Image (cartoon, rainbow, N blue to C red; front, side, top):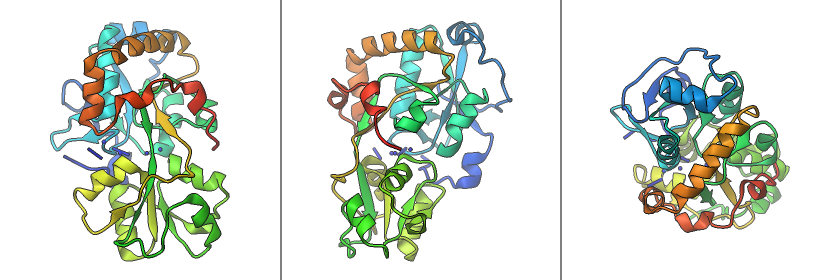
Length: 296
């Protein structure tokens, strides 16, 4: 769920209506298409992708993880890596469908898209429903706060200890799950639709902080200078993401992971990660199995 040199030009502040719309940007071709309720996900995703020449992926609009530019091109750390690996598999085009985080897995299981490439962080509940590739990104979490951090919000434990604090989160996002796992009451959570809405909630005083991946907040800060980003939250779990697939796509996942490992060994992988503000070295030694142990 984080984002943003990426949580992830249009920033993640497209607004709920835009994010829920059936608007898509073709990653490689920079054009747009309507997404039918496809049932083509069928038996062999690799053969299907090669035959039709493309795969559909569910994405967010949360730099630096994903980003939709003004001309409709879908980019960001996750889509750029996904595109590159798919080309190594003989699939030359990838179409992106903008959707809220809470809708990504249901949409995948309903065959509305073939994969997710959106910075959808791994945790137990998600890993029980989908197959994740090995990590592409390992990320940290921070709070967006008012200048000077007047409420001194720096940890999840501190939020739990102060019932007066209100924290903005994206419903279904990884940060929402962190707070719920820590048993922060629902009454302390302010649900927002996107990055812009979270900053507006903070500015208006409806929230005391906005919980989001560190890089996502920093990307938002490039447009809104009137809030601060805390240091990474020490009691938030190490998070990471990769592409996610349906449970029936084990054969495709094996081939994808094989090519992903080879791609990680190239300079192009590091260049993509560096471009979006990530350190490619942070993924070394980190596995999907480890990240899938995150509670939530």
